[in-house]
Length: 80
Image (cartoon, rainbow, N blue to C red; front, side, top):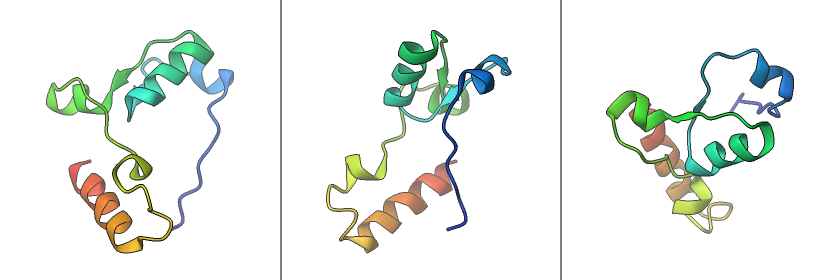
C-alpha cells in the first residue's frame, strides 16, 4: 500500500547496466522509448521467456473485484 511508482526516464535508463522488465509490454516500451534491450524477470529467475501479467490482464474488473485483484497480486508477490 505504500508503493509509489516512478516514471522511467532517460537518466534512469542510462544509469543502469541491466534492465529487468516484469512484462513483455514493459520490455517493448523500454525498447521503443529508450532504445535499450531488457530481460524479463521470469527469464532471469526461471529461464522462461514470458512476462508476469498485470492485474488488469488477469482480472478485467480489478477495480471492482478487490478479492480477485488481491489474490493475483499476492500470487505475483509470492512468485517474486
